Amino acid sequence: MIAQAEEFREIRLKAGEKSLYKEINRAHGIRFPVKVDIATPAHKITLLIQSELGGVDFPDGEQFQKHKFAFQQDKTFVFSHVNRLIRCVIDCQICLADSVAVRNALELARSFGARVWDDSPLQMKQIDQIGIVAVRKLAGAGITSIEELEATEAHQIDMVLSKNPPFGIKLLSRLSEFPKLRVSVKMTGKVYK
Image (cartoon, rainbow, N blue to C red; front, top):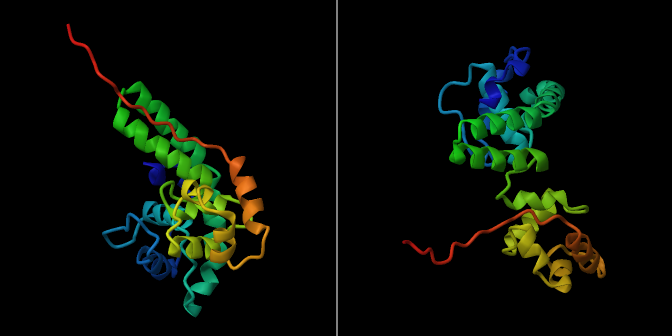
């Protein structure tokens, strides 16, 4: 629904971009690849969003480099609207009392806000001094979420990231200030009369 929004009516698949978006569609970070031939603006917008959320690198091929600036411009334009659009989807689904759609839209809103998939190790990129390389090192060591990183000893963080102390201590200090937005509910015994 987001990719087909009226706000994106000016975004078109330009000459020569089809091969670029086909390449992006094959990337590992694309969770929901377009299963048909990439031919519509909605396909392009879907892949722009997913490439950002999945941390997909721009393809290396020389034939793609002429589209790099337009790709970044289009992505910036799309992300200038997505938060407002997902908020609209949430409000509409609340009005329709569709709890499943509301939950999915809220999760997508969190991903849009962080600009990474919410349940991905890439969520750690939100922390200062943690980039894509650091995320890959942490994931390789079995640390795949902010919660797991927070539970890791400072010296282990230093070792995994090849940093000198007190990097781990400072990182854990920043993590203690990171907002914890998870809520869990447990239903205990229900009495029927």
